Image (cartoon, rainbow, N blue to C red; front, side, top):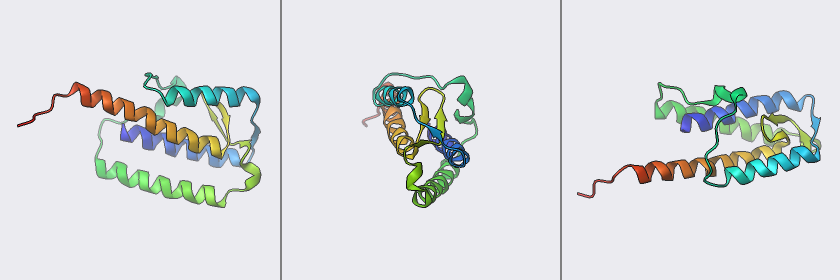
Length: 135
């Protein structure tokens, strides 16, 4: 799951960098789809990764230290991107989510937040399914 979270953030940041060069209008339909997407992700509802985003599925050979290193690097790059971004781009679509539509940087950061919440429910399901040895 951690690998998936990191891959998602890396892919979105990469797309946002490209999208910042040619920003799109964020229409009312994009805003409504993004709001619905965020509400779903803030719930414990199970969601499948869209076919167009299969590249963010977790790999099979995972080491926690490698994942942590990639996430730290990605988060530093995200901070750099946000801090150097133009305020003119705040309301412009720089990333097109396969379900949510065009998102600006604010919506991207909100998505990252609800994406983490969404997977916390997954962790809770895993915890409940694994019997604890209390000895």
